[in-house]
Image (cartoon, rainbow, N blue to C red; front, side, top):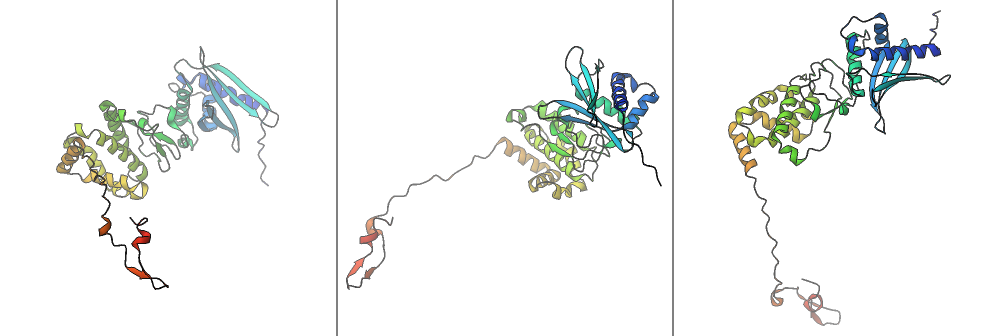
Length: 337
């Protein structure tokens, strides 16, 4: 008969995990450039997941799930406290005895906030852990607090992660799993932003760079980002030439964009196809119509004069049971217009 694993942890086990994480964070700036110690490699291998969370009070924390024993996890919470110097704390709780293991230490000098710490920890974990699930570390992450520009997310599983179009600039998504990734705007773009040429150019070029790294089979992500680029191109249309749009058009002509109909709205799909097929003449017409918008013409309401009483036909005369004949106009002229 197979022996049952003993998964019970002692207070010392909880304290050890906390101490290992404190040591990892304290030395995190030098770990990536030196050979890992056995202790560092051990804790990285034990980590099953690292999550970034923000609660309803907008307090941010990092949740590290460690498995010193294969079938039982220890959940720790890492918080960063503002001050001089900036400090961090690592805490875990042993529910069976209400034992709390907690340590505080100064945050390394080059790490300014909890978002930077999260990115440092995940980078170290991804590069050095032997955990086969490490590429799923960003799944479900809300990236609103992060500067994602220029990030290399190649090969990551990003299902149910939230990205904001404004931050999707020059990101490498090669071979990343974007199947259920959520794309949103941080806020509704204001008319003022649509008149800011520098902002629009930065968004167009950054988003397009990102788009080119997305695998062609990720149709929803392709459609979402392509539609956003087109929206910005249309806002910039009066400053563009036909030659300026050819590189975007070449991308939109790819076969995958003909297959995105089921993954986006009909209007977005039609817009992508319009830009894919746009001739130079059609571009110039669009440009002209943008510069010279047609004024809406409404037929004015004309108050019609009341008809002449003599011209109104209220109907024929009718005979009532008494034999008398009456004309309807005598009874209905006040209610029939």
